[in-house]
View 1 (cartoon, rainbow, N blue to C red):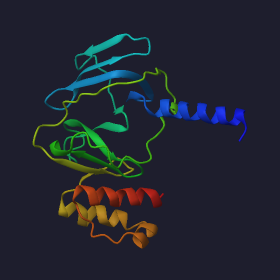
View 2: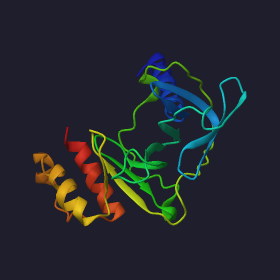
View 3: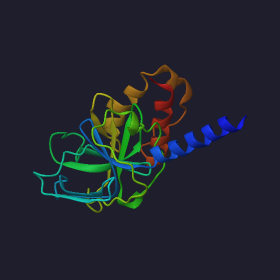
Length: 215
């Protein structure tokens, strides 16, 4: 490999690392890159404040439910936190900003006080720089604080491509909805030999497998 190709490869690697290390939040089709990202929610899970530092080093503070944007996703260092229903069977009721622990065709969300900050099983994360953004900045570091969810309340949801949510730790949902959906994929049937456990780790591994082989 000649010197020019080596330099190009190094530059591409550095650019890739920078691109994928950005904090950001998504509102509709707009993505805002930032540092020092924080947010607060009401008791019903709705946003009441968003704080961040923009590309010019300005500290931005937005307060009040009528003033804060309708953020769909917060992101920091590989962690996605999405706006999802508080209860899977009541999608139009209260909401919670909840960690997306598996990404892909099927998404898994976990709001377990014991496992806050977990970083495993986040595959196929989209590159925000390929989106149609109207607000873009490029910081270096950041932090996120969340107040979503209530201490001691366990939420473990599966989201289908059509937007339907199912509570995973429900035998009825597993038997009637989740397992039949997974078995529609022949490749999954041929490779999966597990017992369809509702425990977090084996379930996330199962969905990760499904996402990797089922279109």
